Length: 196
Image (cartoon, rainbow, N blue to C red; front, side):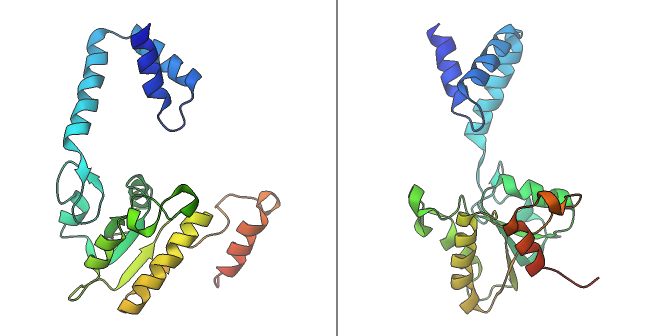
């Protein structure tokens, strides 16, 4: 049972996976043919060996530079700053953004011991240095206290460089009801209102 307990323990360390779900996944895997389990193990091993942060933007990729940085069709004058590499997918699914990205690797959170030097901010500032073609930095951090603090910190650093700093709009989701929205969301929607 030690191996089963080890696998359950490792699975329970994944975000959103509690001990019960980890145990269910473990027993699910044990019911699968051995070649399926071995294929999963090979894929996990390959990810560990081959995926690294892009040296330019910090996105996780098998290639350096990543596909976004290497694509000459992407607009080099705009950089969208996200907290984690997984956030890029959400923005790409819209089909509305065609610039480059920059992954911070987290957000400021002094209570958790995450300070500016723990994030990929120095590389962002290098990308905005002398001779840069970047005209706009879009801060796409999460609308949390930590995300807001990170956005404000970045604005204070980038603003003096003469680069336009914008923030994703916030407010009511499409299909949402005012009746169920919290006060902060309604206030943000009011502040960000636009003409029809």
